[in-house]
Length: 396
Image (cartoon, rainbow, N blue to C red; front, side, top):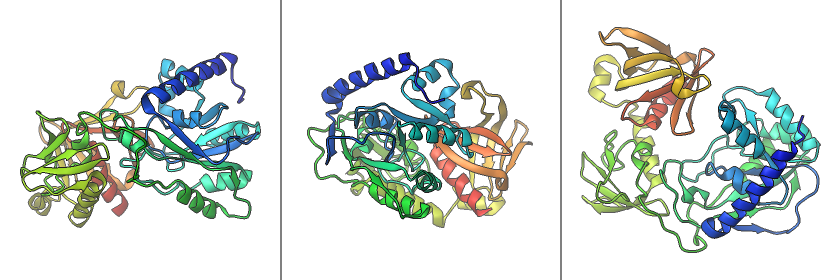
């Protein structure tokens, strides 16, 4: 059933009005489109995925209600579930094929509603779009659906996924005219959408005054190694200037600006940008996929954390049962957690891991053995653990 209760529609309309006012005053939103009129009847609205606010921006690009898929985890908490439902969301289970959500989407489209999709499947870390996930092309092809493509040009600068705070950056959204992909196969549709949602990471104009504060907060968790010396967990935010990160190993320091550039300020640090620094870290650790070469040569340990906590995810991550807690050691073929006496308390073979994914709040989730697990290493980057886990999961 896709009909919306009247109180949900009223709440949506009031919320949209408030958002539009806030967008003009705070976000200084600009919607660029060729036509003022939107199509009547159902259509699918697709966009790149830059932030948690993207569903809000999609709700602003036209006057009608927008329905969108949201992680089923958001519907576990009663109050939050009521809120997201009122705002037009319906649940989609992650990591598995969710036929119910797809059927709901199809019913909404065929009943003349607007359904928004973010075909990359997850938010970008630095503005770069990821390949469209398989299945989007089949869906659009099977419905012969009308599609409207939008591009959020500056959302990745307003609050990068790794950042702790918003920056004062105008929001610019481009909206294409409606199109149907009649005559194209599913893969060709995915390729076309992938081309259409690409954005320029370095827009010449930001549309007005742009600034931020404490812009380095959260960056050491994303850049889990120093861009210069590659020391793991080497970066920290400067206590005197929260726009600056510095490496405790090599002494280099960089200042973060609103365009996500890293300006070298101490120790001979060279200018770069966050995306390029991340590329350098990935490239270095693809050639050397372990933390300590001596330790790896001695006993095969790829990565180790002194305080690793594994929970089985239920309705509430914080209240989920503990699976294992202790020293966590990642090997090329397994993850082991040892208890106080150094005995193996829990072992997870990597060939039993189906998915490694970063979730809301930068929590590391792993699906294995039909269970969804939350893994946290105290005082260490979950993104680092996700990178090594995924590397060896694919290798097994």
